Amino acid sequence: MLEIEKRLSEIIKSRGINLAEMARLIGVPYMALYDSIRNKYRKREIRGWELVRVCKFLNVDPRDFADTTQ
Image (tube, rainbow, N blue to C red; front, side, top):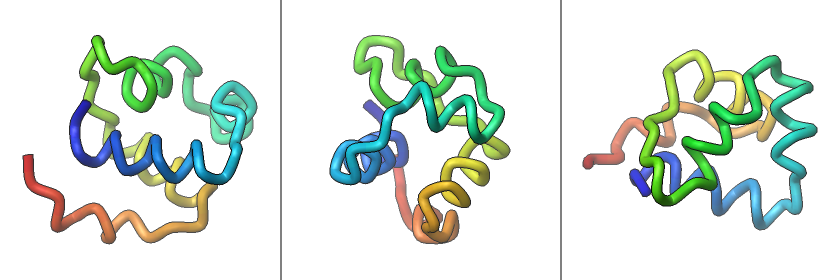
């Protein structure tokens, strides 16, 4: 799993957030989020616009992920 996606997954899991419900509320397809954040075999990078919506939902600053190198 990529570093940004791994960190997002940890935040979502630690807060007990239902990924399907979050996807519905932020307008991002569930399978896109699942493949980016939960599916360790897919290794799909989260898109920029998806990251912004997820961060807004989680109330985290997307710039916190800017120092992440791959």
